[in-house]
Length: 75
Image (tube, rainbow, N blue to C red; front, top):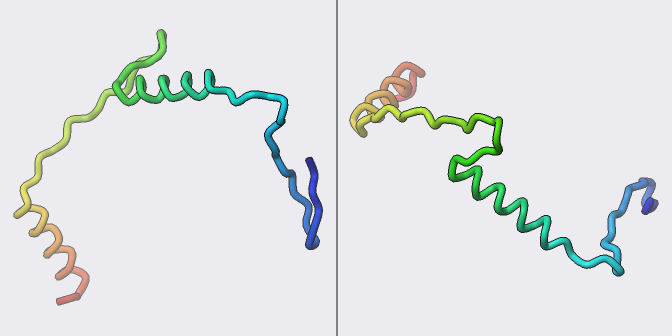
């Protein structure tokens, strides 16, 4: 439905009163998202592999932060 006011025109979307909510579609999408988060994929599509993370010590993170701070001229 097109609505106009205050010098502008917008498309306004409203739910139809005669149509029920689409719980089936909501459940299907939710199940697909949950399956994807667990690493599942539809047939023919290769699931993404998570790259192994490099372990970094807290001391190494502090050293990098200090190097950036001093390189930028801040003390």
